[in-house]
Image (tube, rainbow, N blue to C red; front, side, top):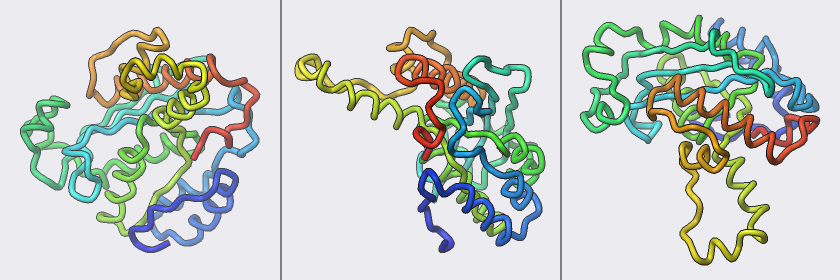
Amino acid sequence: MSEYDTSVPSPLAWKKYYSEQSQRCQDSRIKAFYEAGVVEPSTPLSNVPFVALDFETTGLNAQDHSIVSAGLVPFTLARIHCRKASHFIVKPRQKLLSESVTIHGITHSDVKEAPDLDDILHEFLPKLAQQVVVVHYRQIERDFLNLALLARIKEQLYFPVIDTMTLEQHILKKQQGVIASLLKRQSPLSLRLPDIRERYGLPRYHLHHAMTDALATAELLQAQIAHHFDESTPISQLWC
């Protein structure tokens, strides 16, 4: 892969990719992540260990903006492990913009003494290892983390994710024949996290706190699978 290659393996090729990357990478923390391995593609959803991941950032462009906080919530289809949830605030390399402060509420004083992302990797990465990462809009979490690591330690980090936004797009596309007449009368259904949750009868949470949004994403995936998939479905059919 080139320095800024954003291609990812096919759904069935992640195990090979992890093995190859564990041999290539030099940073011990990244090496340990890859050496821990990846869930077998044939694993049924009911047996998969998930971790919902959310970042708050200084903007939406991974090339120009930075991570300011991360929330992680481990879960399975049967249970969300709130006591094992984690929240990190990190110092961005760019100055906080007033627009982003208004959105996520993390201020200059919050990040003044915060560690750099590089300083928390030893704690952060093991929370992702051997889990299937669940996000809402993968271009934020996977791309921001990958580019942040390239900038700091010249290493790439890719992993399979389930993207609840993409999953909902596919669900709506399959339902298109049933709801076609409705969509002709109304604007397309929103793919924003709170709007999708509302369609599943899930409660509204305060937006733009990384750990709360991670929790909201975990609950959404549970609902999506309960409504549209069999728990025996192999994980390779949902991740990308």
